[in-house]
Amino acid sequence: MSVLWPPDFYSDFTSRFWMTYRHNYPPIRPSHYKTDIGWGCMLRSGQSLLANALLIHFLSRDWRRTDPSDPTWKTYTKIAHWFLDELSPRAPFSIHRIALLGKQLGKNIGEWFGPSTISQVIQALVSDFPDANMAVYIATDGVIYRKDVHDVATGKKPRGDFGYLNTRTPMDVEREEARTIYTLSNSVDQHNNDIFNTNTNQDPSPTQPPFKSTLILVAIRLGIDSLHPSYYPALKTCFRLPYFVGIAGGRPNSSLYFMGLQDDELIYIDPHFSRSALETKSLVDYTAEDLATYHCTIPRKIHISQVDPSMMLGFYCRTQDDFDIFCEQINQIGQRYSAIFTIQEQAPEYEEDVRSEHDFGVISDEDDEDKDELNLVSSQVGQENTL
Image (cartoon, rainbow, N blue to C red):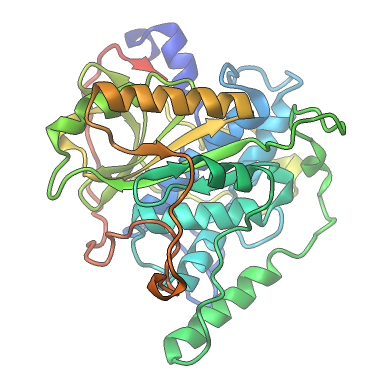
């Protein structure tokens, strides 16, 4: 397969994390689910986007998965372990913890997520795991507010607050139970914790700028039943930005992770392949072959016209300067094409009586989403350029 692709592209593609359906993992309490087949594709697409953002954050965009003897391999394995399918402190981004946070947002375990839900869950997961040393900002109604990004990056604004979910109804009791299980899974575990001691490559000295590296998530809908053609140019241009980490979206009700572009076709990684969950064992006992199950060897593509209009875009800004340049580039794209989202200095102020107690600051178009489909997406092979 590799001979059909440019070597640089293929090396890059096979180094990206690929999160897929898994089966035979410990039950996601308080449910009995031991697999996410049929409902977890957006959860897995969100994991892929987050994992690859962390890969850039810790190892840079140019890192490639080659030699296990390379000094960077330990950092790479650390990131992979964070996504193991288990409810434990060593797996802060597991399918278990994602499902439990979704439960607090009103999504039953075993229910399909949309872009709005997965963006809120990612923000909470990262905020609850200090070792990630990264902030997460969620755009509001298709607008990135620079002041709010700065507040998030400097620690002035906490993670999305799920506290409005008071215990009053049977559903709220279930949410509280999910919250309790999730909170207990945050407990510090010293067993096999040595692999978490690797810091990011940022200078921790007092002279370091206060702006923490930030993952910006934009949950948007670009059309009604299909992606509107007027948004094609701006969306395609995003793939050329050095800050872009991909899209969690896909075909209607069947999420994919888009990470590259060639002409009018998007290169994607498909989560709709199930494999057995890795056995729970000491972190040092996981082999390169085990970790290879988190990487795809067959690039696939889909025409942009076939992409569902509801999606979550991700952008990673390491520094304040990166964020400033990113804002300038987005403004330029908006001036040239139909803007898919915009940049403003700060959010407008409203009277308290017009605010909703359920307002998370993101759009939601998920109430009428169907369950995801199990159809595998076939591909046509060609030469393509990645991010």
